[in-house]
Image 1 (cartoon, one colour):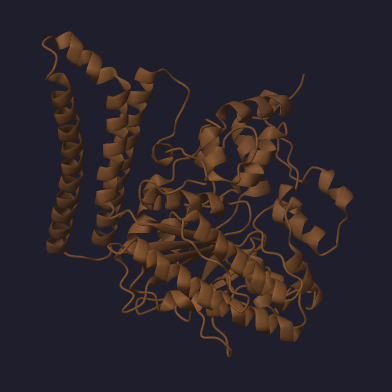
Image 2 (cartoon, rainbow, N blue to C red):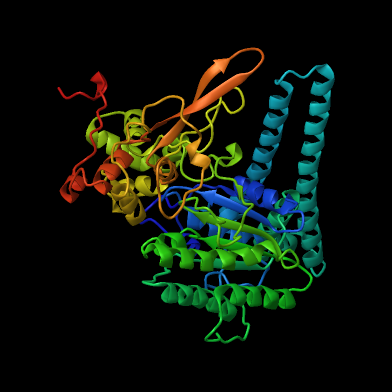
Length: 542
């Protein structure tokens, strides 16, 4: 996420902006590794990631695409290599300092992986294992650490061999020193460090088929089907595959043809599929009458069903969006088995900022704004958390996940920093048409959802295009209007039972919900959020 000026929606824009952003490479590698290691038992691994608006879901999808794609594939029609900037946080500096920065950044990633491995090992030991288990865990940690040392040694050997090859034509040490500092050596360091880290995390290079339904628009099933075909046709052009749409072609048949052509183009390696904004077609179809909606959803699910039977061509597929829709119905098999990674604890901090991230990235801005408001930087951070924080994407389990981070919305923070620190309801600028329609068709009395202990894990459910009953609670949670807290019901030596409690995460989402449900007007959105922080005597005026 960009730390200065505007909010970026594409990876290319972010990279070319030359701004500092928070490095998420370690968690990205873990996510890719899970998808690579999955055994689909005859089908590709199909995964889903759901996050509210403003959490950089599309940026992460493009970053994953950039990490796994085979060299030579297009990068958003921009001929740039963004991979090193995904791995390292760049700053304006001299070429020599940049080389040192790149080396330190890569080592920090490896060290963070070591720390993660050690902490996992310690957690396993603390769960009641005896001395023998502790020794096994310690040996495992040493083994993992030795693997990381092997990676470092591998990098050093590559660099040493490269320097030796380029230094054969020179007889004095001065010339060799010049080679060590030149641009080609810098490129070598970055490229080979990244390759070594990818090898450690099992990040394999694959052709990437990237579908984005963000701009799909239709007024009836015919336009809906044509819209899907147009998006597929674009992929034929991008992958330089000659094809023409038959007037009677269905999205399912055309998608199957596309995958077959990609299999011919890359016969020795399976491809990966990234489907961003996968939920948009459902929301578009929900605007039709009931029969037309079912027809369009069936058309879309039939198209996705091709992935299930493409194990010969596809290794894994990642669906990303804001809402978890049912991917199978009575009229279409669709994708009946999808692995939802949205609540996995290891990815709880992949999207968004922690309090420490905001403090680190926006240190200068926070100091200036807090000085203007005559409060301390810590108090201003408290205000930011009340306004834009409080999001939990995994269980805050005291036993298994005690350090589950509460995240802040990065888009809101970026807007706030570029608007002189004004605490306004920035999320209200988003489009929530699907939620508005759902609220019209259901009771606005949500006392059954908020502030009640003993709730079901609604966040993990899927919804239909016609939202009814508790599905409204699921929709609100997935869109970020409610966040969960794990509540222990019974705790004994024999067993533990728990349920959940749901609350608005922050003032921004509460005001946005009031606006969506027509409780407040648009004029109220230009008023600061009602956050109160007591000032200390050090900052009081004389």
